[in-house]
Length: 228
Image (cartoon, rainbow, N blue to C red; front, side, top):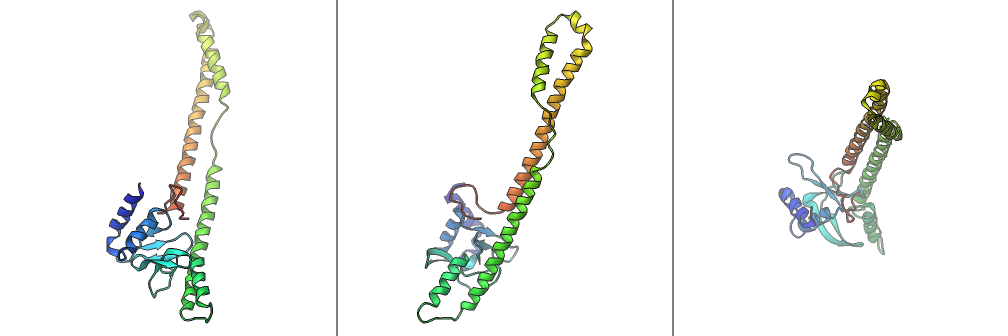
């Protein structure tokens, strides 16, 4: 899906909860390039913008502001919780703290930034745990037994069968059991190839299931996608 189309989709699907312009367009653009993703929370609750580095903001609070590190999405809200931090990551929060204590320290309001950091660390730790579970599940899937037999004997026996069936009908009639036994070996190799394909497909489907689960609503489909 093209970037412009994603932006239009984000704005349309979240029209009820959008911040004012131009913050809504900037938010949608950041979602479109994979810097964050939208997490819906159910009826009557504002969706969240979730960042890979731990920050989370309720959609109506999002603002596009110039910060110490350049233009970033921040939140304008007095709430500080698992669902609402001021900055998108711990680094931005620490930058704000350091700016506040430069020169004559201005300590008012810094306590809530500690709350933000605590929630972001917790969110990052949970994400790390999710990846650990994902890797363990992938390893388990890759260890599944795949039914198989060597394939070269199948080709060898096929050549033998071809030679047998090129002989006279009388010879084939006299050696019918040998011909059938050779054909059955070819059949058995083919059957195990089918078993093998089915087992590999099962593994592939499981890996895809695990990938879709760990990715969630995150945009991982191009080089611009930064959302972890």
